[in-house]
Length: 475
Image (cartoon, rainbow, N blue to C red):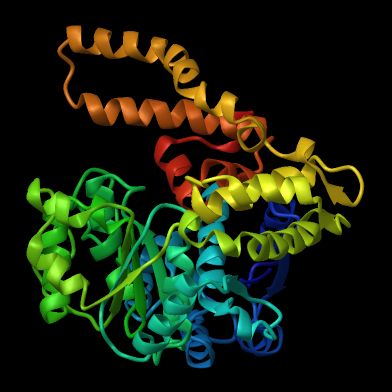
């Protein structure tokens, strides 16, 4: 991927280029000192993200930003500004800037922000297409020829061009995000931003701020005003993943946006108008949550103007060989392997497995098998034990029960101490231990860690940031 850094100070460009290139070897960092050259590079090199200083020697950075927006409004632009010009940067965010940083820039904060921007760029620019459209070289394919998937394709075709809210239902790992991106790429808003947010990955206060933005002083740590996703995605599409995990208070604000397109930032009283198409997804039973007073019925009515139900992999098991072929090709490219086939015995094991983790689990299994295969053929011995030994799988709950005996003691200790907010505290600590161990296992490789955990890289990075876990603390 390509990153363009624009700053009129050569020493700043040097430090950015060196620091960012070392942190991400696969990232090509382009630099320039002038606004005119920046505009030329955006058009010729088509960077995936831009870091742009407000003050340039030949023209205003905000004029450069306007030119970038006119060329392609989906390119995430991170504004860098001095303290005296933060209001200017905030105004730029209202016009679609991805985020802004104050000088002097913290390189670790910049790296995290750039990672997020590149992921957003990927979601917006790499299409999620059907197999029939696979002549587009760089794309994420929705793979499947079963009757169930044929119905999904027809459904996407019917709803994509209509400006209505869509609710995607399905178990974890069935490909709900791919369907959301496919709807976006086939919609009339495909030249506008596509932003995604995982509602289950953020605590309530942070989620509300991410969605609607906040005013300066709205809460502890709110040193500057911040624009939310509903403003950033103006004219485009916002994907609310795991919408069933929203609090009732946040649901009420989302409902108002869907009803009349208006909201207020956290800590503010000025009503803001927005034009955003919402695509939501959840793996939860919303009818059940409504009966338990955990989800608003009126919000469900607004969200399910059109509903897409993703089938679990066990209900389209005939697609498994096709999915394996597709995933094997991707893994060969990713790990520079030359695996040509999978043995009939191995295929039979995978075909009869019930796939509780759906396509995401299959992806993890194929990756595991590729990494453990020496030669050109995947044999049963290359598969994870869960796919090879059903008896071991059936004995897992008892083993896990023994492993979590220490956690039970911690719960009893907290109960005896009368400490509040028990559930949230335990989840935070569980995340802290689990994510650290998984990253240690994969030597800090977030791609492999997120695949094994069964979550997106964006969700993993968000959780790590919320827990204050960086590479040094993990090492």
